[in-house]
Length: 151
Image (tube, rainbow, N blue to C red; front, side, top):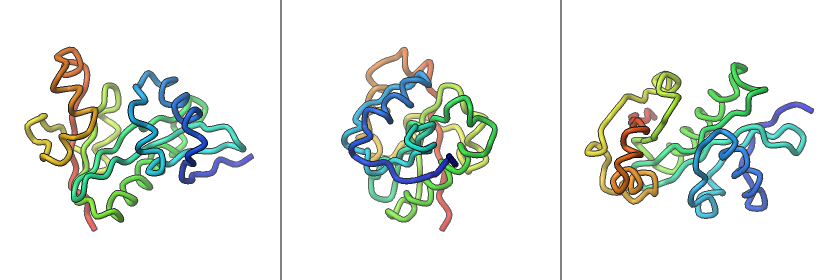
């Protein structure tokens, strides 16, 4: 089968959680945002995902994960590009994310390091931001980043 990049379906929550958790990331509030996720589907097996949380003119890119067999093939770039285009379509002008290990991956999309104080009020509602504020150990592990989305 050929890998297909498509929107996630509500009945795939468990499969998307498995992809996220396999990459060592938390799969919080997935039920709330599953319809704003994109997946890499290899004939019924999910091999990657990325999601968008929409907060009006701002968005959060989250849970970008690509299984080992697809790493280095460009599928991660396609996932992020599709997710950011989707966010722009929802009206987002800025996008935020947190990363532990992929800081070097995101600048190609315009992301730069920022501080928690740089997060605008609407985005501070996301669980990742709240977790960083509430737990010092997360602040030490996660790198916040921000990008301006061009039209």
